[in-house]
Image (spheres, rainbow, N blue to C red):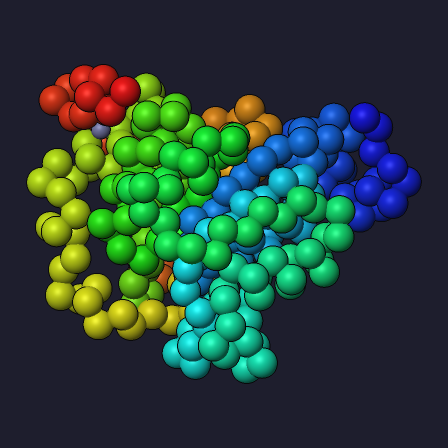
Length: 251
Ligand SMILES: [Zn+2]
């Protein structure tokens, strides 16, 4: 399908990028991206994906908006307190791009519903806030063969890793001793500057964009961002031969 005149105008700045063009923009419109978690990371991720022109966006969150969310969760306002994050997010996104198909999952992401929610998407963005649920997402993506962009944020920094099943290391390769070992004391206080989530979320959207455009992604290890030192570091992570992602145990 050719781009309409209106689409050509909305996405003019995307189309001017030589890696995109009209053909690339059409690819973005034809893509299906799922975001798990509509909070600090999920808010900017969802806005940028929607405004980039992704045609089908799924969003999953069983939580409601609370006052302490409003230092960073830029999809919501005071009027949204107590309301479903997924439903309020969908309303805001639909206003930003009325042509997008927004699929809402206003439920908590669990082992029981994980595969059903994930199965029809091209790529998934991990905007969760705990490692127990991230491991559920990890296992569903490995089993279904769907790439996902992991990220986590705390205080003034964060981490990101793009996981391509069958190619890159997974979260279980990274943390073979399981989810419990991942919450250190500095993360338990929930402190975060909102802009930190914005930075890491923008990096996640860059990874989604590059994957959909067929450009190289950061799938060979962990990217670490430190906003105090203003530095990025990359740590190479190799797949563990003993990990369930390599043993076909999840198949
Ligand atoms: Zn693994």
